[in-house]
Image (cartoon, helix red, strand yellow):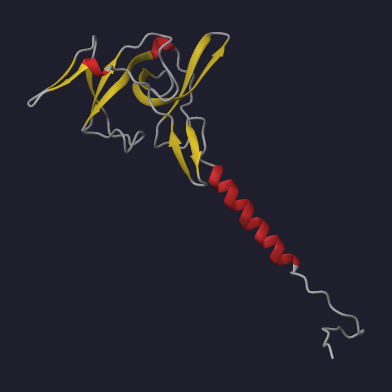
Length: 173
């Protein structure tokens, strides 16, 4: 003899999930996907759902230009300047206040997405050092979009080559 789950009218009740339960599961799945992609910006390559990898800088030095000795390191490249950085946290953990950088003045067509540049900001004031996340063209020519590695939003201006003071070719800790 088979027992049935019946209602008061004698009809079998179908076994279904309550609508509220299905709706709740849908909201959870939707929230998971939204939060996993909320931090994706053009310079970030998705890895899994929550982690992203930044575009790497170009290789600005050849092996022949770097000589390592027991008591010194020699970089044979023209126009290298030593730079230091303010404690803004925008490039943490790569660059922080006691970090030193080596920069050179690039040629206009050398810059690539992933390169870290220093530029004079018309909007933010002062010199900013951030990563290039996009290179585009408009009616005025080439412009660069930048963003700090530790920032959730890109910088608010189109960077023109004339604003660029240098490209980071090395970091010293």
